[in-house]
Length: 459
Image (tube, rainbow, N blue to C red):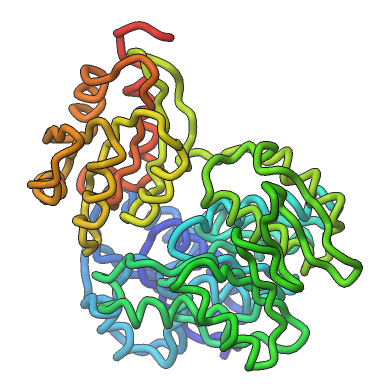
């Protein structure tokens, strides 16, 4: 019998397919059998199922039933704890873990883990950029980059900088990065976790296995993440606090418009806010967290300073799309919760805004966002499955003109009609994309195509 035994893979998204393929490569040695189950009968699932079957994986799609007994289940992050497939798996398997846990257990290189409600992707990419700038081989994996298990399979010796979600962390056991970053905790995915308390506890699992030789980077400006700084430090872990209000001892902060790092040799100036190519106060916090994490991992302050200046915005995160119909358009499709939209709004100072909101609500209360957007935006276009709910949240608030349309195509057309010279038109939807698109990436790319096809003339 192989050391891993009989493996069950739950869900055939990108990480599920990668985990099943990896385990198939161990058949006859460490693995006795690999079975993959996905409740969806979609064409994309069927294509992945065909590829895996060719590798010797038993694949079952369009079902929540699980027959037999398995030594280990590797679960895709999109499957809620109460989903019938997950309930069936817990009854049929000795252990259920996430793909990120499985990848960590199989890897032989040090990890940096980044979690938080917002800012994970930018911070993950920026940490990897800073490490490479410092001559430390590193690559981003997880929710940004390839599935972590693919990087493990490929080898290469690079440190892995992993964007990890609360879904993935909820199913970890021994996951132990050398540096763990917690950016913020604000309401999100309540429909998946069941409560805000459960969501916060799963985020904090990123610190569960850290010891005295590890570093936790924690944003102390955010009321959700700040309490964990003392808790983790009291557990014997070195904590690097980050703040835009001051420069914490042994951490990173902002003073006189300069990003600074407090080191054993003294405080080091890294760069001015104006030198960052990523915009908004939230990205100052992300840059500080990345600087502290890279420094904890061994990057020199000079390399960090250089890397902060050269890092460019990532697709779907306040990404400039172009100037057309009198305004400048921005793709922030990754903003899938209200707090992310509030951070985006703060990135435009007093510039006139047209805001596109909509998609599938993940259980968020839209009224607090509406109260801010009504004052900050000149116009709001609500679209998609949650469009009516979002529009209703603006009732009685005054301020922004609110338009309700069917989908993203109609939202872009409406925004183009409303646009005036000098406007910023911002897709920052506060919702998931699954009512209309496969993921936020597809939504963002369709948005960019629609903007490119507008015929009202370019600035």
